[in-house]
Amino acid sequence: MVLLKNDRGALPLDPKRGVAVIGPLEKTLYTDWYSGGLPYKVTPLDGIRARLGGGAQIADTEAVDRIALRDATTGEYVSGGAGDAGAVLKTGATSVGATEQFDAFEWGDGVLTLRSVANGKYVERQNLGDATSPFLNQAPQPRDWFVHQQFKLEDAGDGTVVIRYAGYELPNDWDGPNSYLTVAADGTLTLGSPNAAGAAKFRKEQLTSGIDSAVKAARSAETAVVVVGSMPFINGREDHDRTSTALAASQSELIKAVREANPNTVVVVENSYPTTLNWEQENIPAIVWTSHAGQETGNALADVLYGDVNPAGRLTQTWYRSDAELPDILDYDIMKRGSTYQYFTGDPLYAFGHGLSYTNFRYSDLRLGKPDPQGTFEATVKVTNTGKRAGDEVVQLYTHQLVSRDKQPNQRLRDFERVRLEPGQTKTVRLSVPDLRHWDVTRGKWVLESSVHDVMVGASASDIRVRSALPVRGEQIPPRDLTRDTRAIDFDDYSGVELVDESKARGDAVGVGAGDWLRFSDVDFRSGARTFTAKTARAEAGTSTVEIRLGGPRGRLAGTARIASTGDKYTYSTTTTTLSGLSGRHDVYLVFTSDSRISTFSLR
Image 1: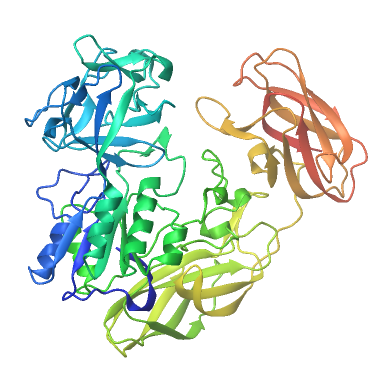
Image 2 (image 1 turned 90 degrees about the horizontal axis):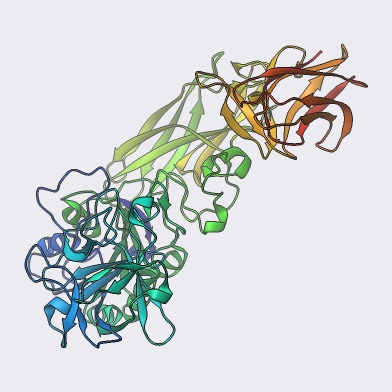
């Protein structure tokens, strides 16, 4: 578990003080995609209750809205079954009993799960691949690869809602076009319309308010613990990713309402991924993060909240402040987009390696060994526990190469060491950097450049406590030589291209389109160059061209080569053209006019 924030000693909690445990995850545990089955379950509420042992007063609420759905045409309520196996959802009831009540859990982007009050089971579609399949209240939790327990209640504009089914199988063609619920002649709810216009309309009656119950519980206790987070099977799967890194809107609203009712609020975020928590960081005294950790989650959480265990987890990702700081979901070029702790230049919400403790640590006396020809060296640093509690510190060593031919990470984690220290104790921590080399695309080998490296040691990527300069003797990467065959994928920069397979068996190439370009930096033309030769493929009919330019994608034109159609993207031919005016040192740009592929090239 990671202690994200702890303002003015809000944690650990005093076991003698009354507590309200609030939120949609306060008394449930979810399995994750690759979890085993849980042999037993200790929920957050269970763990806190066991820790207090019946001493302090405990209030709790899941703080979710309890609703009933009433057919706007007939006035009849939707009913499920009371038994463990549930029943097909139908309209017909004229009053609200347990079988007509559903707890609506919201997980972000408007996606709801509906849990039947009558049997505690979730509503799901009965049969996948059957367009007429009804819905039952029978699922123990949202589950399976095609998560078929998801719904959206969409405003119909006249005080009613329509129900859109949001199961993950819908994009597949075996189910037909229908995604909205209709009511059959016998009252059964089925997928009967492809759009809201043809859907059945319902009046959503709120029987109890989740916010109201949360505020009441929070006001009854000295401390409020709000447990929010994710349902691992929803908004967290390939092809069905989250559209935002924010908490579900209803969970954010819940936290704000509880904080207003009780300033002594602790937020526990139990989820599968980083989340933007800007308001919470500014306004909530203490925040704890945990994954969906398994059957002992509740006991572990209570250990941390009440100080029986000093938290020592650390984040393995950068947590950003907004979606705007993230690249496109399919853009994996962290260097060009400035992503991850290595290249991000903004101010993260929580840095890579972040995690607080109930004690404090001081760093001193950083000493660096002499690097060997690969840049291997050792460092030692003294770490002292300056607080009143024993605890673990995770000592992290980062480096940054100050001068290089190539773009270097702003920081790169090289080593870390967990060290346990009693109050007042000092230990010397030894850290090892195995290799300061990086890959030289100009010559296809690992290289150690002559440069000074900034060596930084601290508690996270943004909490550096001591640093020192390390001169490293290596080599200087020479100007680029394009007279030999050069792989197109060994570019220094690009615009708009794709990395593709050269053939079905092996190899890499670059796929290009109109206006795309590749840059090869600092090319030495002392011996001149008269001919451009390239291995290219073009599946489309007709021809394309590649322009050889100097200094920029619109720089001086040195030559233009014709790329002929080969009829297949894996069939290559050789294209050549004469060049003029090449001398000195220049950045070379290959600029393309339409779809094609390039594997290798040379300028001789």
